[in-house]
Length: 446
Image (tube, rainbow, N blue to C red; front, top):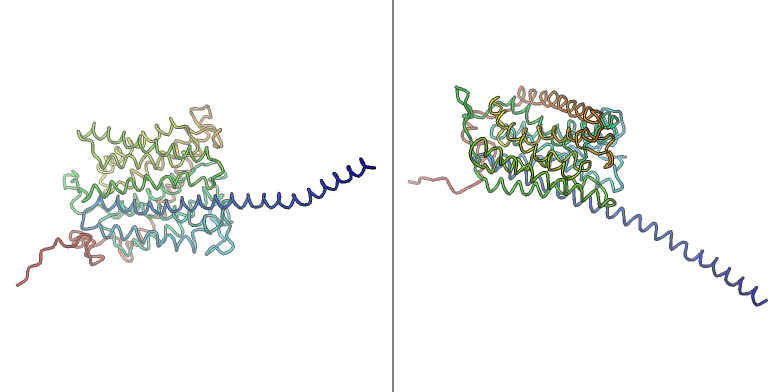
């Protein structure tokens, strides 16, 4: 009887323990899921803040590389870019990019109504991260068309690309569109962000035509120096810093620490290699280690590694960045020969290296790191490379046609370029009625 009562007592104790402990276990599980979601949210928001800070980097780079008389104008364009991107991407862009629809365009979620998050984080956090990317794409164009584009026309352009053009490309690649279904890969935006901005800058610069005094009648080019290399240097460092939100933040989760660390390492290595190689080639070609080209080389490396950063080994990241540094110098020289006046190198940095970075996935990418097919050097043949080439070529053609149309319409209506007198005097005074550096004028009083 004693043994029986003991067995019954143990059994009751076990059953009671199950009833008492189970709710705590389930509560702990629920709590852990919420903690993970919260950590992912914080991580993505921090990354979004870093990408937003890149607007300051773009502003400083572009301001430093142009003349003092146009500094306020270029900074105002950068400032309004993010304003336009925020509103345009909220009302139209997110629905077009991530809403359900077809392979070409999304059609649900206007003003985020009924929209869904693309990750295990709140919609608001995911939207802010993507809006920061949208603003970065838009602001690339300001540098290519600097010192002669009307501010009014620029505002219209900025809204159109943010609300409609950029989101369509984003839908193709990140929103479940036709390119993503083919296996096209772009981890953080060499094509989605940088090639879009770079090719928009190219067609806009061609339509706008060169600045006054840039090219002589015999075809030779005149150097128009920027007014502040220190300002441009600060901008490059800010961009390099912000890129640690741009690329690692695109993991959208803290769950895979190895992936985050690999992306961050590859990002840094490519930037360093790009800066070194650009400096070396410009030193060899022109006899001096030009700082402005070295800085553009680092940016070229960052643009190039943005697409493949998750899919390649670190040695490949160095090669990708190094090639990017070489390409940016050659592209700047080529544009000068073609009389395409790009004051800050927007197309060489973002367009050329957006293409190179996207194609490099098909060469150096590894299936073991999450790619659909092995890269060329790992025996995968031309499959992935062909998909990448199709994707980036399609985006380039789409941007050249759509943005070319936008700029042509603007030119025929409100006008695209300021008057010759205003350009010579400076857009700061003509467009904004103020100077970036007050106190240098001499006033004569009687």
